Length: 160
Ligand code: FES
Image (cartoon, rainbow, N blue to C red; front, side):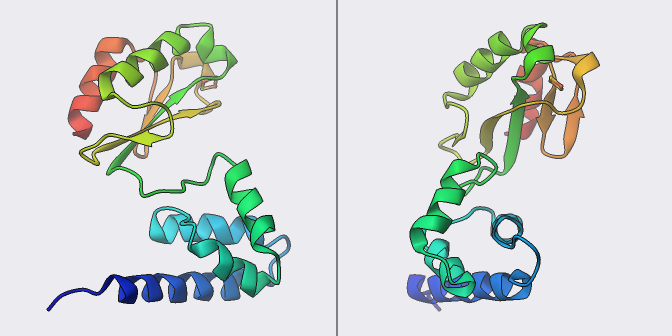
């Protein structure tokens, strides 16, 4: 049996509509809806935007503006593991910028992008609450402190 792409799109749209309808009565519903869509479906697709706009009675432009304004929202499917390198001030003071550049070279992608094998999405983050142990890196759900380039290479190796 083959899977029809149109069917998948329809199933996704239905799922997004269900999320939006469930949360539309919370205060300031758009952000919670976008977070829920990303959590359930991995990213906020462009095709999700008109569905959410319809449920909230907003314009597509309004929803699109919020999705593109906040860096939290991924607009394409992410990799199997997300590696987030802190680039905030305390980590910057102990080499986070160089570590970020190292991560980009090693993965071959910039912040916000995914490796071609789909293994790793590299991202920057502004404070992981681990400032005393910078540079800080989060791999999946795990937080790592005092990450050297060599340690980052090992973490990336485990993620692939
Ligand atoms: S500044 Fe990097 S964890 Fe806080």
